[in-house]
Each structure stands twice: as C-alpha cells, then as structure tokens.
Length: 110
Length: 113
Image (spheres, rainbow over the protein chains, first blue to last red):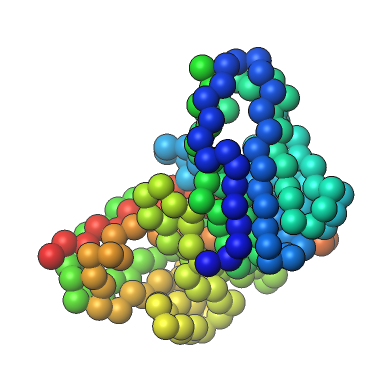
C-alpha cells in the first residue's frame, strides 16, 4: 500500500470551530488531493496540489482551504465548521488517472 | 466534462464473469478512462485505466470500443470478496490541470454464494 496516513482518523467538533485535517505521504509524490464522501454523492474533489505551495480548487471547495508547505504534507482546513461539512474525508496521492487513497477521516460537526 | 453513467447496482454469483458498463457519451480526445473499487470504510483502490481498445492486468480487463463513448470493466470469476462499489472516471487533462475527478455514485456489485 502507498504510504499515506491521515490524522485524526475521527473527530467530533462543534459548529463554528476551526478544524485542520492532515495528510502525510512517504512516497514523495508531486500530486496530492482532498476528497469528501457523502451518502448519495460519491466522492467529490475539494482541492488538489501539484507541488509545494501550488494548489487548485476542485468541485466543492467553498468553506475549505488547503496548504502545502512541504512535499509530504497536505493540510485541509475548515475555517469555521458547519454541519454540512460532516463527512468522510479522503486524501489521495498520485497522477490524475491513477491515485492511491488514505484510510479516511470521519468528521462530525454538531 | 464527460459525464459518466453507470448502473446503480448489480448482482452476480461466485465464479461468474461480471461486466460493468459505463457510458461517457461526450468523452474528449484527451480523456482517459479509469476504474476504482471501494470497500466499506476504506478509500477507493485503483483497478485499471485505459484510452482505447483493451487493457488487461492481473485483476481485471477494460474494454473500450472505437468510439470511446462507453467502457466495460470485466471481472473474471468473481468471489465474495469482490462485493464492493466500482467507480468509473473520465479524467481530462487541460492546461496543466485535471477535470473530471468526480467519482459519482458508482455501481454497487453484490456477489452471492
């Protein structure tokens, strides 16, 4: 399996609080991605990165920001969490057409 | 962007060959077709990708007709452990970025004994 870890694996937070999810890779891959998965919607791309400090928006980027200060780490931040951001978040690495996914983070916003 | 359409669910039995077809009528020249498998509580796992004709690996085959408006994932001799959700993606490379990285709802394949 590709060396991808996500932290935390589970988090419960309250509406209005900031939340940061971390994705860490040991594969030295240039591309990294954040997705969210919700029942009835499949996986949707939030943001992706094509290098250190190079990021771009995905399909559902509103309410999320990302940062990538070094190759191995890609952070996803919810500046002020809302209940609609309750979801399972997956990080992935790899080329656009061949990605390897992390184990996911289950986030609940009360 | 090439929209994909897949059956919501399929049933089959152990030992059978299973074919899952994905429709992508407005696929463009620069688009690649990719399939993933996802088990409950896990991230998707890459299965196979292709551009045209047939691609085969140790897990599956991918058939793409000449017009590329559809593709078929073929799983030979399935077992109970192949019960999963299968996603078809059409990924477009454009101006240094990628479009189409949306997994949709996928096909829930259920294998029975």
